[in-house]
Image (cartoon, rainbow, N blue to C red; front, side):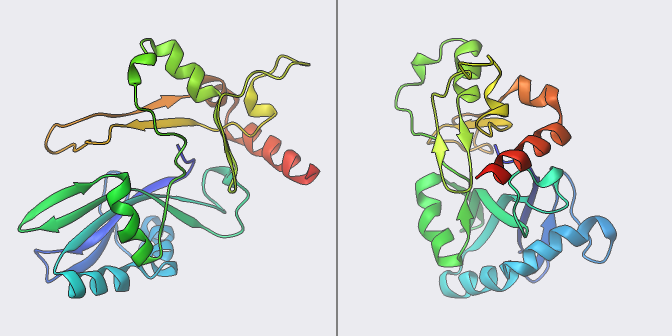
Length: 217
């Protein structure tokens, strides 16, 4: 689970394929203060041009949802020098219907567009091993991510007994999604597993620790 702002972008088939951007809940206006940071990211990645080129080549529209992270956003705990966008959902408009693309199917499309997916923690064949909420939370608390690596199965620090957030840059949590997930069709499942300790510490404290660990490298 990336710590940032979710936003979606697409071409509107009802308005002559006009490019638009939405926050998690609202369609945004480019000229106002709320929409500026979202549209700035879209321009940085030249998403409108890429979506129009994809439509011209394939005849298919795309709807892309991702998390933008970086300066001025959620304390920028990853210490990025500029805003980055990580895609976690992609739909393709085919024959008048939006079709959800799974993790693997979206890969070649995003590569063609020059966009990156959110970090993949693991592929788990048997979810039966997580038969309690506690087991899921313990797994989520054992995940740490940096822009270069992902670690799983980490434990509490042996010397001070503190949670991982203070030692390994543990983050907000994980998103679990089934391979066949399609919200509109009511198929599969997708849910978040939050790291409670992380949430209790607050972003300012998390960011402070991240900066300290980054300085020690």
